[in-house]
Length: 477
Image (tube, rainbow, N blue to C red; front, side):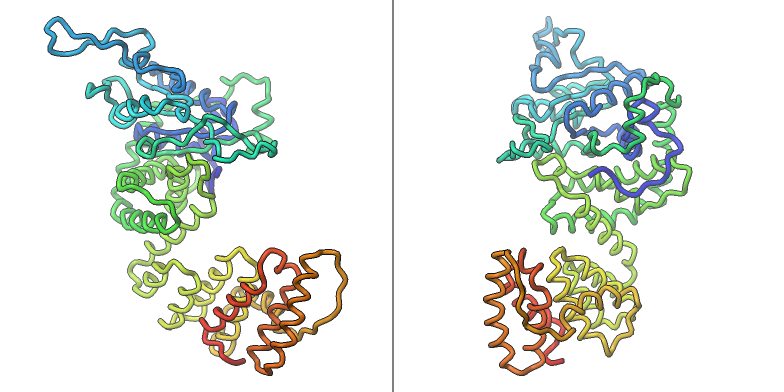
């Protein structure tokens, strides 16, 4: 999950710090700094997580503490508490590495941290406090972890990064991080970034800039963004959180509020970093991509699933004034959207858009064919859809609506042989029922043979085909 659409950067924070291949994360990093929000970096070893944080701390001139969370004790952080002379309060006997005077702390290997210590990190990360005592100097609390190891690691997969001992964070702890950021590995870097990484040029040859001034400017810009978009973004967040819940990615009320602030900060950051006019649509997508706590689990959500949630929520939010569109977009099922649009009398272009989305909503090829046939038969005479809608439909329906014969074939694929034996017997019996629907069913099964039935049971697919025909009212042709 390494990014989304983005404008060309005028300033690259990461490249200016000598970190290459991270440019797509510049707006997220600046947004986290401008809001002083906790940020969690997730990635394999050797991907410059620690290097980035150290260089940011130097650029900001802050006293920096790097703690290995898998090794430290709580006393290493705060010192040893002892009663003062009055015995009314505690004083801490500290070491030079204690947290009290730090402006920037980095908890590395936090996924290997003991559970009892994780609990004690909550107030530091979220409130900047130790047992209720404010950490007056502390601004930034960032962390890093390796990807959690799966319950059943595949040690035969040499390409997999498996980190035994790296565990998913406590849900309450991960919910303290507004930004949850996967970082790029070598295979994710473009060729230019790889070359610059291997260059002998000094890191200080990168463009110089005042990071402190940039952060202040981003904060000022957030006020304008909030004034311009704040109320409308609230509606967008409502739909995003509801859609994430439907996608089995539930979020807390805290996360909803953090996401609103993150979008505002990311948009302000992108305005500063880009030469181009930046769209709020893309800012919201970027912020959502790097704000989900599930990213820190063994099976993080795919980029495609997050983008799909964003786009649906964005469509609903931008069409809130249109009751018809709102009714459609609040419907999760893409096929039902087509039916609702037809019932509400949407025009041909709008219906065609929804039909195209319905076909794209399913990965299984047989389902695309099934829906294309049903929708083609339903709309071919009463609708004049756009060529953009008809083209994908007609390509799919040719498998079914062209005349089909049962012929002999030669193959060594045992699955094909078994399927053909069963299909041939079924087709002979089904064709005895001399109806249009019977012929459609036979053509559907024959037209998708053999390739689609290697991955899907053809009997199950036949049941779905019958259901799709019934859904669109196809009783005869």
